Amino acid sequence: MDFYYLPGSAPCRAVQMTAAAVGVELNLKLTDLMKGEHMKPEFLKLNPQHCIPTLVDEDGFVLWESRAIQIYLVEKYCAHDPALAERLYPGDPRRRAVVNQRLFFDVAILYQRFAEYYYPQIFGKKVAGDPDRLRSMEQALEFLNTFLEGERFVAGGDDPTIADFSILASIATFEAAGYDLRRYENIHRWYEQTGNIVPAADKNLAGAKIFGLYFRQK
Image (tube, rainbow, N blue to C red; front, side, top):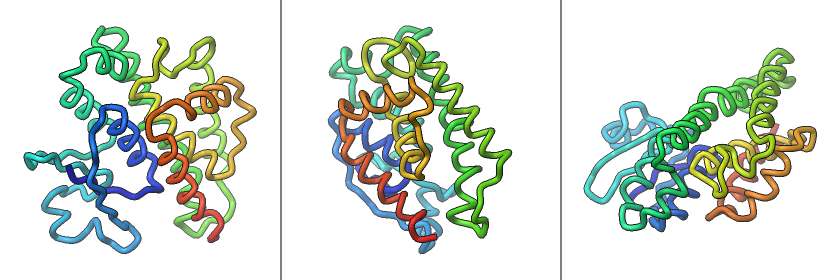
């Protein structure tokens, strides 16, 4: 299946980790947003929202938004392995609800506030970060630190779920931006432990380092 992506993108890396976990090979299609490749007519035909990641399955089915893609990959490609599906995206309504909440927290709060604080510094003209946005971003990290109190993984349980993959990609990007995670004990512990056991962890770290290059170019 074709996967339109940028290695520095946290949402793209979350999908890559999920694909590795379910055993799906992605045909990588590098899509350089800086060069406007996402605005080409052929891409707009696939995805009128012109965002990455975008997945095109072998039968031509097209899907974008990383967390939707993560869920799709598990539900479709783990059908032959219910035990794996249960670990990655639990079927119990309450367990699944917590995984969903963490995914929504990542897209709407954690990574969103990261972007609001850092993107103007690296893609805009602002050199210094906005202090109000910094406080908002750190509040999101405090929430995550609380979620992890007494837990091995972000949605609880004994195994990492797709919520861990999504948030791991986001937190790797915080680190690449130079943010010191050690002040959040639970996040730092989880990041160190989970980063060593998830599939395609090397791709996540390599992609985060590419994102970090934006800071060194300023």
